[in-house]
Length: 568
Image 1: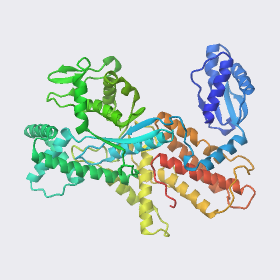
Image 2: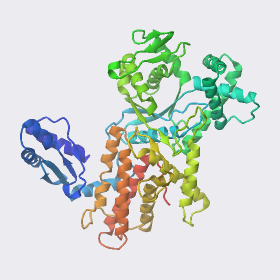
Image 3: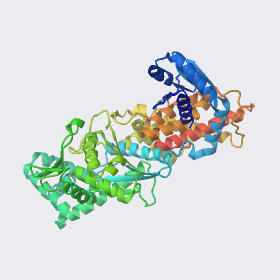
């Protein structure tokens, strides 16, 4: 990575000057005339050395020029002491050659080679509908998993599902109540969602119903009631089968086990582990009003949470402690990444604090990332009231709009349908991934489906356009060196590995979305202002740019989990 080489070069030069610098910041100048990279390290170090920044920059540049600096054409001082680096043509030619030669591996690195990484995401609860919140978690988690694979790590995907607990008891109560009212609806996801909403509402408004639901909850844990067991087992399987169908629609690949995730963990298997951990650590967890709690350290801004309730049933908190142990026994990871909604951010701070005391080695390996809500213009949804926007409904609506935008009469109805599905997924996933995680997103149907601008379909269309041009040029020569001058598009292409590296280090997909949009804009500007197939001496170079652009767009879209249509 050129950035790592620059950091090393600067650090070594500072060392010769007797200065240890803990952080070297490198940035891409907005104005290309200011170089390919710039650093403000001279301004930062000049303060501690009590010397004018420009004077310090002059000394530092002298040291940099005295050291071997392959790939760097010149180093200049700008303004009050910024240092600008300009790369030479040989560096750009070699980088473009690397892009073409690496193919599907273009952009990968070896920063976590052979390390085991577990990424847990989506986590839908059984007997409830798969809503747009799950779609958001799935999109973010899948992209993080794909990005982590570029680091050379062995990555496994995990899904943790609530198959016991009060939400399940509410749904079972709702099923029984609907049947009493004479409902003959089939046991499918829609019916289960309706049953859950009925039970959840009753538990809030009807004291007798609440008591019945608490009793059902106990029976589910003990499996002591045959009638409830039968309803539970059927509902559980219906939910799991439905979820698997949703994962396929979202574009998840089938794993070696024939499913979308490598591992499926369930609360019904973690609760006993978690309960034992809590009971085995009386110095960490304490009794309070018949329950067992963990007192959060107020100085850290942590609140107190119940880990075993007064009924003796472990809560989500205790189950998560059990899950961490089961995860590690199943797959001894170096890094465990957990993706949830923002609503669980403070919850996880407490759980990880407790984990640091009972399983410090696992707490150090665990990373939690939270995301905001995906909202429609109509507002927030609620599974408890039944006002749920399902992932399937959103995909269907966006696909319907996408079909209207595909006007090419050469496509068969089957091809149109396939492209529309890919465009719909691209529109939704890009809208989710285009900004840093943690912020709420209001989904804009029109903007998300735009073929011009900041959208997933714009990236898909740019790729298809590049592929179409390459098909026309089939058999023609490609050459990375036969140029009049290095194209601005060329400079954008070779940035890709650095962007992927940053996304991997931060677990943030938005660095890739931002880069791809800039690349697509640069490519479409190049496409609109350049006659590529003109038989000129630099035709082979222009084709190299088109091919490298298509490969970069393809690799980048796949890291976002966005389908890559060959034609649009």
